[in-house]
Image (cartoon, rainbow, N blue to C red):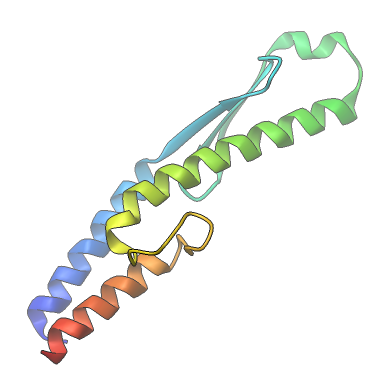
Length: 118
């Protein structure tokens, strides 16, 4: 890989990292009492619990609601991440088949190697 390709690839990686760091996805439970905000890697950034959740003492149901709400937020974050990195993925990539942690970088490396081989 020549220095120009290396520099271009490094810039692409830095761009992806910045964009991923900015991803935030929010989901609300069906009853509106739980709100979850997650980042691009699915990490919980914020969890909001409406005080009305304490009206019933069903901790198992509350745990299920919190978990489902977080999962919904993660799915939204993953969709947003896929949209951000789509330009770095093969044409046949889908949200279900792409490894969003590594595929964008590996595809960029492959493209840089192809350019270097010409």
